[in-house]
Length: 393
Ligand code: MG
Image 1: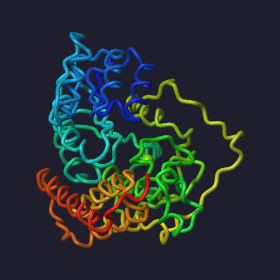
Image 2: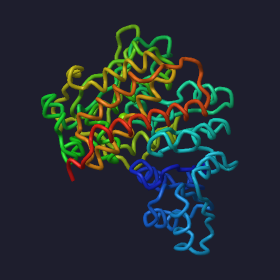
Image 3: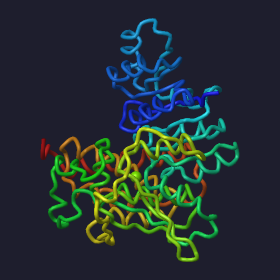
């Protein structure tokens, strides 16, 4: 019997890669539902190619345009943000690939956990914002959370060499992004084009900017805390510009087990789908003989303040990671719109964290979303008061 998959966020970078992986794994896997936000053209193309019985668009107008375009094609198109929850909890779905950008994927991820699905989680925000709630819900309902983020997939694969009590350290690798060799001042003044020029990975704009500030790694530290049930002090970050060693685990005996591969998201996506098995797929092979050498260096915490703030937010726990993430989402959007300089992203996160009073009890979805909304509003107001004109195109 084919494993039945729902892809949340099929038009994004992860979603497109997931469709490619799955089409190579047919007939063992079958996409039975997928969702997108508002990219009508691409989503219609995907529906025509995949022919799932049900699809969802979170933007109602886009859903309407999609229905009109596809006519009577045998695919029911649901509309609105709640439609994500609906397809994540469909009876026939075995695996939910969660690749929605940002906090918007949280209710659907929770719904999938409540429905006892296997949740292949590619976007880090649900774990960053609601790590405790999501992992607890998964345990209560027998759902499995499998990482798709390349670093966490690497950690997860390395963990197969021992048990969690034998783990001394998880070492998350980071490329260092486009500003690794720039000064703090050059980084502060970086343009959109410079921030979007990632040296090794091809990803969506939000995560590429997050990689440039190392906010992405900060979010990944928090993600690792929840995915692997580790105290934050057991997590280290190491700069590795070649992006070949995707992360490693150091065990109590001193053995370090790493996972290596080409920088291609198709491999971690495939592993989450086929786990605990491995199969031939569509990924390129790693040629270490051509690479010659792999290099490592410690991160510059003075320059990449997002990383320091991320470790602090992880240590504080409670609502701090929610604020940390929400402020960043708003600031990155403003940066990508040319409204604020690159350096203002981290400044505004720090400011928002300072203005926030941490709540340390287990927060409900409603409380999490209220904190998220507060941080977004605070940051938006702070940014529009500080930056009144468009500074770059
Ligand atoms: Mg990653």
